[in-house]
Amino acid sequence: MKENSVSLILGILFGVGLGIAGMMDPVKVQGFLDAAGRWDPSLALVMGGALLVTFVTYPLIIKRTGPILGGKFGLPTKSEIDKPLVIGALLFGTGWAISGLCPGPALANTLTLNTGVLVYLVMMFVGFWAHKALFKA
Image (tube, rainbow, N blue to C red; front, top):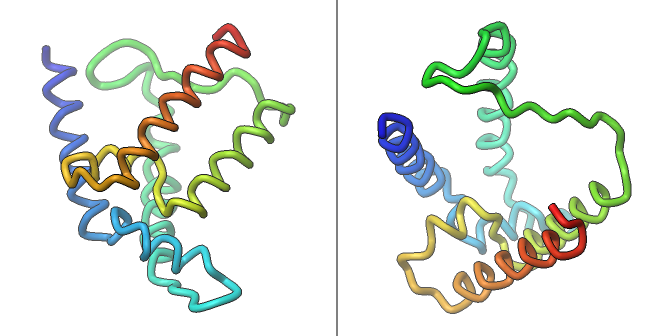
């Protein structure tokens, strides 16, 4: 129960942060990705802030024997770049560029009932199902 409460609080905090940063606005995100047109570099500050926090905290966190609420860290076991990784990255990047959304902002935008967001979410779950079917995950 404690883990679920903390997850809910952190999810709400994440959603609020996405909203404040403008990352829930697909047009703003597409403006950032449009380097050949009317490029909006403001989201680089958001990404830079996230990288800064990660670079400072990751070495401290990884020294722990496990997460504060128990269990174990879910760290990747593979280190090689393989075909599924490259294809997945290409699909993710293409979908992000076309829609201006990635999974976090799309879920946070669900309550807007925006048709584009709902179509994105349906296709995201179709992609989850396709991956499971193709790779027997």
